[in-house]
Length: 115
Length: 112
Image (cartoon, rainbow over all chains, first blue to last red; front, side):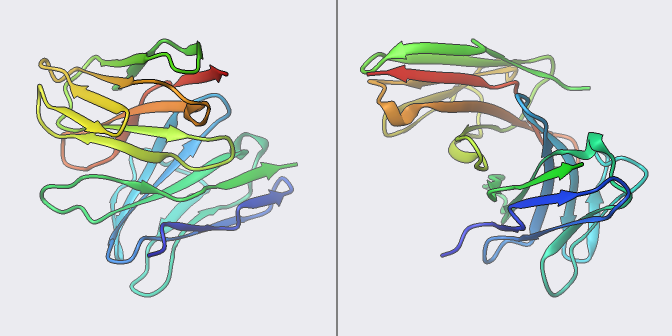
């Protein structure tokens, strides 16, 4: 009964490169959320997706960031032309979003370092 | 935007002591969740609360959903060394989507 899986766990990119972060939700979960965490801070919501749909991207920067959750395969958070300020831990959470349960279960995160 | 304030910011206690922490908001939430995060790991869900006034336990952990729906409390009884970590409260956005608003965290250190 695997939990939420994220890869890679650590990613180093030079300024201007692209970063692709992957998230496989728990089995049976069709709702995925991405959060960002800076050191010594709480998690900040970025985007909420269902299969093939973006439901809420109010927390995502307007430029350089995009997310998708295709019909088949993992959810992808993509950061183009990374800058030093993008260095953070990125967490994915999944939820079954049943009427009685709004619990979100988190993966281990991807730690992005931009040099 | 919505903000959640947690207190205390950090706690240093001795093994066996009880711990209390709380979370307050400027706006109401319909769901409160408490998570624990270890260094280098993702948050782990401890307790979920769905109703104002609700009191829920999970082993040595007890959490309450405040009556005003603007606060929540977490208690840990008889702390042990593995309780060390950062505890986050999170409120579910009641309007339209289910994004979580996270608190600022309470860092717990337990000394033997």
